[in-house]
Length: 126
Image (cartoon, rainbow, N blue to C red; front, side, top):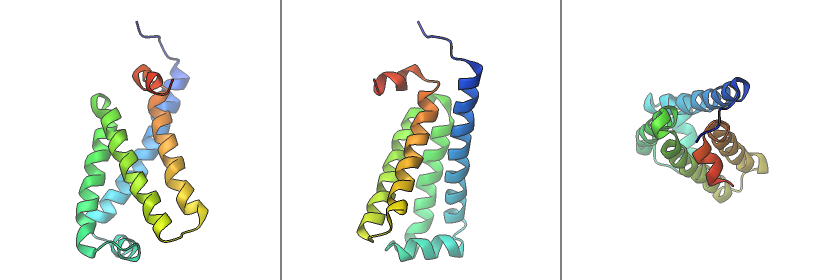
């Protein structure tokens, strides 16, 4: 039997998830549009220019899966992998600590949004 969660907790969860989704969608759209920022950012990190569109597609699909309630946990797993790749890239480039911590904090907020409303996620972390 599932416990009823408060409306406040539910809304906090949706606001956190919405914020995460907006950020990921902005990144995906920039990659898919192959903006100068997306291309220069990727190439500076060592990724070939030709990979930008594929990275955008992967990010878009993962983000859409995260927004759909039935696939949100799967989407979060995929996005966690994405964020792990971001951390690894920053480590390889000896970037400042903030650049390493930002994707980690982003991932924590991403999972927190699901944890606030999904008992199956709460059980994963208990």
